[in-house]
Image (tube, rainbow, N blue to C red; front, side, top):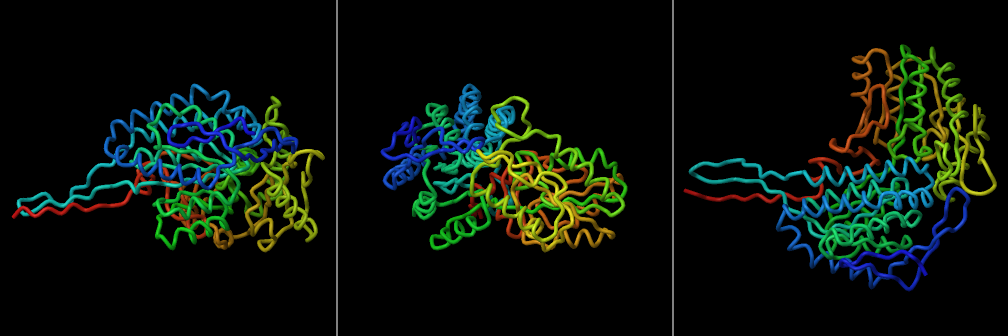
Length: 468
């Protein structure tokens, strides 16, 4: 049996079945999570449906409830952070930052407003544009930032007046279930339901006829399946999918400064960030020096158990992803690439992989053409800036990208030519919860954060009044 519970209709519910949760630092099962039954999924959706009319009617109570929710998570942050590190792998200090970031996201969402837009107000008539919630929203979240991504989605949906069923990844369900325990009394019953289970559970949830909106973050392949599942019932969708972000380093940079910033733009969370830098195009005049500096950063940055103080990066979260990263590195090696540093797992137990810098590859090499989602970075050279832009854009992905230069105006001009949702200048992974986040091409549909998140959680109703 699991020591964790589901949250359904305001009650903490135990389940008959459970499934193992693995600590990626050692590859061993350390806990079991509740396996939600189909009947319990239906109960959660029904509870959300019944709670919706009252919840959508009073925004003042929604704001109050979200602030109580944030306070409850903050009060339990130490316990949640420890479990987050055990199941996800990231260093404990970063888990604590994730939980506190989640608290901030909820607080920011609690202060979002949905003003009525007046198009016409005259003796002849009144035309207003209102934002209305969808109803029941199914939120499915990934394993790389299981709490912060979930709370960002949930808070925006709730303040907009929707009710939510949240399903975390089966690789990292426990921290989210601890959030459920913490916020149980902060929200009215049925407003937020949190369930866990293996992958087939998500298919039933997304196909449920009472679910009107699906908010999903995960892989492109799964995102396509979610879109297909939503199509027969014309459910609305927000999809945050993968990325293969290119960083373009121009000839006039300070290599040492760029190397440090770019390293963390690529290797934060051991590269398990959808919008991390995943391939670098460096001008031929700085290429060798940048490779050397990046390799030095990679080799000196400690990797290991996130519960051990001093480790700056943790393991890859799960064995399927670990195997994929190793496969891509071996493919590059077998096709003539140079492994400048790293390239192998760090121990026989667990999923720690050495920080890896790769050169002597081209754009067709899988490690460049595909999203690796791990602590591996290929660095390629270019001679002409237009060539670099073309190569950066030659992908099905379009989540983020960055340009690095001593000339900010020039770099900004290049950044504007990147085909992606977020283009940075002299930085990467500089995220702000109050600006829109989303991607083009295969990287997603829709946007989250700020007023754009509210718009994505609502639909338009026009009020048209004839006065004369």
